Image 1: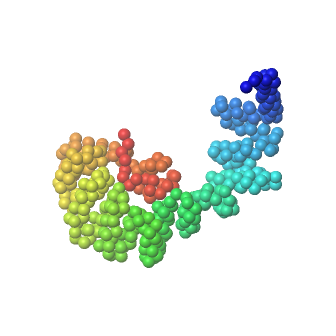
Image 2: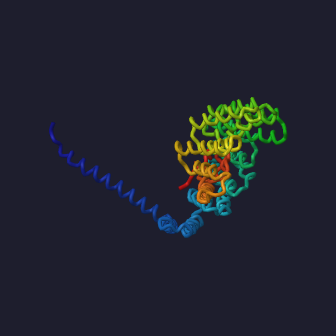
Image 3: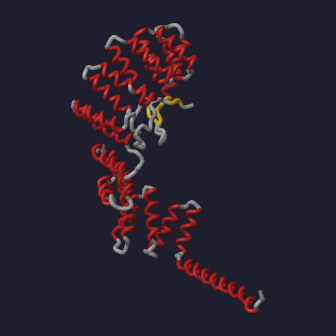
Length: 385
């Protein structure tokens, strides 16, 4: 193959084209950077230097100079909402919603942001109205989740069930466990009104939604106990070991009282002792300890707690043991002082704690009062160091 002289021009030709393209790109970048207000860069600098207040003012100046900076409006609104400046967030998002030049997708986004502003501000009715308008758009899942949050806050359990079922059909992660609690709440309301039949129906629906719904079994047992059928109550409460044995402390005292009403306390004590072998628990032991002390005397309670202390040493078991040691004695001052010290320490460091948000409580809640998660608080108290 012969070498042609013109081929020498190919390489410089392509180099020249690349150089021209680069020059065009650079000029475009420079032109665009000059069109951006200096307030924007000041705002970024304030953010980098952790001066959010000054950054907000700088960004607000940008929006005044260039009203078309839509994404910056959204960013500012979200920033105001996170900082708790809800009036300013609402004003920004409401202005966006009212603009006539927005595309439908942008308007829906502004409407969704406004709904979140109202929700955080506690304006639940206005937030609900907005989220209902978003039920058919791209924000449908988020809108339904927020509606569900609103209905739970308002304790509108029937509406919550409807929304949870819609989320389930749309492929949202399973809502069955939470929905079972909504049915339990309806059952509780019926029980307060002495409406046994509807309460039982709601609880059966809860179990149909979630066969491991411990709370439904507990409430069914309560219904039967109130009706005087201790045998049926015991059957419901004993089912909890298969559903979730960690919740046995919730019903242990109920079980013992039901057995006692049947003159079968020994069977009840034996049952709880069996639970403790399979599911060690300081709270469960404390219930057994109190029952033994009340019905068999402090000597039997002391022996029981001494054995437990060897097998599962802990502050709360030690408290029970020292309580039995000091019961009925007048002359062992040192032991009494030790028991009083340990008891006060137990009262101070033992608490229930939500696994989701860390909320601490002195009593057990099915729903965390802080983050509203269901079964977020384990039924066993923990001991802080």
